[in-house]
Length: 339
Image (tube, rainbow, N blue to C red; front, side, top):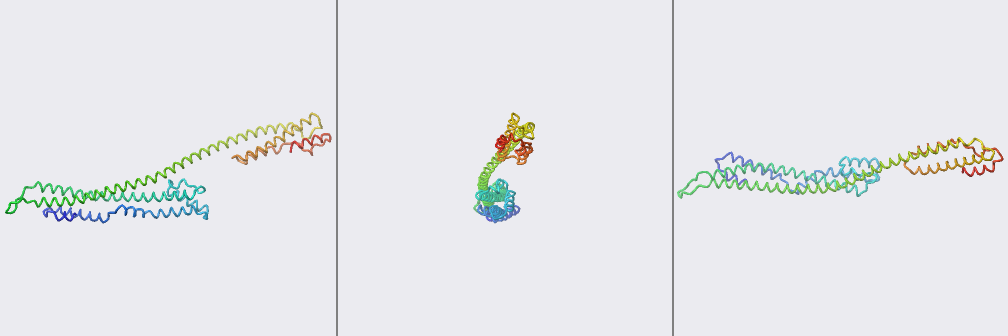
């Protein structure tokens, strides 16, 4: 121990004695504050329990079906604000209990492990500071030992024995200090191993999150492509409707031009009149079917209604307008045609 080193100091070197005493006090203080790996893990993990409890409370609100949509959505947004990597991909409508629980568990493990890693970082910093102090003293004691060995040999006593007391004292002080330095180096190595293990655990947790984020990004890209394709499809559908509307408009104008306001009395003119009426009925039937088909597509209802409304003003005579008794029989065919 350093106490043994102090006992071994030669009294003539008061400056070195003061340094040894100072180093002894520093080392004793360091030892009192030194934490084991278990203490670091426990204390640093406890330091983030507030964050853990907040996340768990928010997740309970998100999963509480009795809470309002607004409250649940606000809780989910707060989780996303806390950490987008873990909670950014969650959706209030699609999130399942297992998904949210997995995200909360991973986040909890991650912040605890991160805190533990930082605890080891702090402890390694402390041991390096103390080791630097003790190594400086060890070097000075080595110089003192070397100086004692180089000093002229002293002969003492009636038996003319060599005086080795300075060398023995210097060696004792050096050996005691070397034990301290070696212990600090051992502690540093253990902490380096501990922080390495902690970082590996962090990486393992991060790997899970990164894989989920990568999957989420792929899903987002796929959704964007699907949305883009759907927009293109809608645009094409709208253009198709416009083109169809234009053709039907041309047919409407042709019928309006060819169909008189009153039915002709008979013969070829009436046959032509009836043919046009049948064509008009066919167009109206096509329009009705087209409206039903288009309602099943992702297009604006207003545009469809506008297209259909354009044919409401076609001037076509009805049965009541046909007053010539000679064509009543053929008007029955007309009635059947436009139903």
